[in-house]
Length: 142
Length: 84
Image 1 (cartoon, rainbow over the protein chains, first blue to last red):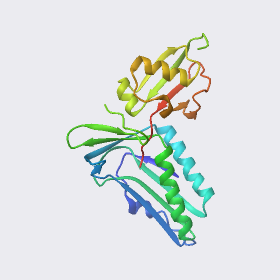
Image 2: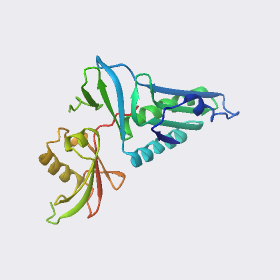
Image 3: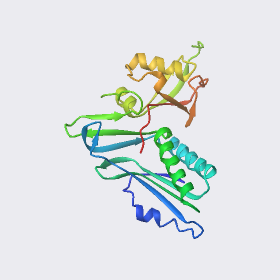
Image 4: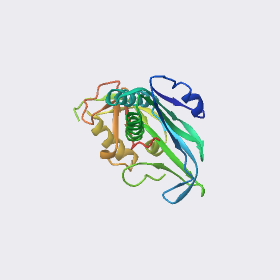
């Protein structure tokens, strides 16, 4: 499952849904807002999403992970809106019989989400400027 | 260009939205494909992103830049994504 939320992510609440007694491994990943990017001090982040397509593409990625790896359950939750330093931007949880598949599926989901889901990140810097982060090539300034 | 005029609904996101100054608009265009349409809009609004770095969605699903446009289509131009 893939979800977008404009509310703070609570890892303990999300983990509570992973209680399959046939599973020996739970791997979770938290992506947090860093205070520095490319040497520039970051004050906060803003996420913009193309909601309907982001939800579809995110769900496709999680389904791909379930087919590709021997895992029982996978969930990815991504924030929208404004986040402060240290805030959780994205959370991934994968439950599996064994740790190898759980680690692999978790890595696959976060990597594919970053590359494919229509979500954009604007960094607001300490000097008052801001910039959209664009992963390949130089950022586009406003 | 196919000589016909289509009405399309456009959606802009992130850097393109800011450059355009709005998130949605409806326009009449002679463009037959999203690639033609992006070229037309780039020339009109001075988009800095080259077409090769922009993905396209038509009616809420990813589409090829050469996808034939129809009257009433909703077209979204998607700058390089940066989730996570």
